[in-house]
Image: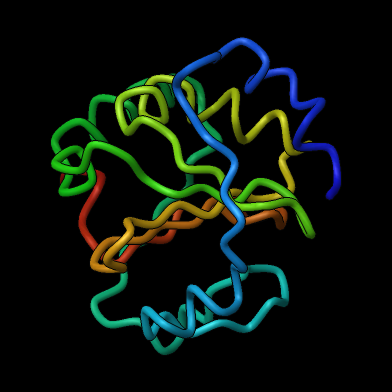
Length: 142
């Protein structure tokens, strides 16, 4: 099960998350979220509406502020997928919003997938050199 049990960020967040036994591929298919598993987990060319922006910039702390004003802030918890073959983590949404960059860093910047239990809202930090944050809802104000 990968490095999830040694994740340095999760070790600092006792009581803010739980490790699930949810199978990622099965859950995304159940939620009708298209998957591709190449560079990204989600097949973004089939997602409508789709939003994206470059997230790896000086001052990107503002992304937490953007997320607080986004639809995911209405959920108590979100699911995150940190590393290949690791289980899905259910995490307190406010904790995710506060710690998104640390969580991404803990993967070695190899991407981070976030989605709500009902699948209405999902987002993905890419693991390629374009450093895009894709979502099916607006995050960054125009």
